[in-house]
Image (cartoon, rainbow, N blue to C red; front, side, top):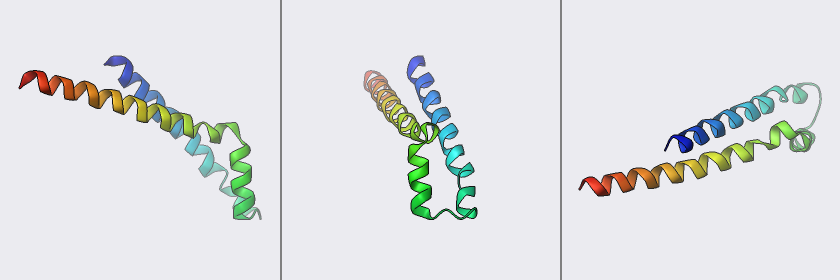
Amino acid sequence: MFKYGLLLLTGIFICSYSLMFFIVYLNLLKMGYSFFEYVIFVFKRFECLIVFLGIFLIVISMNKIIYFVNNICRRKV
């Protein structure tokens, strides 16, 4: 159970780190980039692409945690 909690926290950290760069790069819109150019720029950056890894880790860990909790609830009944 501890490893899935750690996996969840890692996913949250990676998502937060990546989304921070999405916000930082919003300054490009103020500098004259169009929204389409902004999206292309963001999806070329590694630090913005790891948001998908973070979401994947969160989904996997939540599935495991929910499965674990359901098994504990069934044993008590």
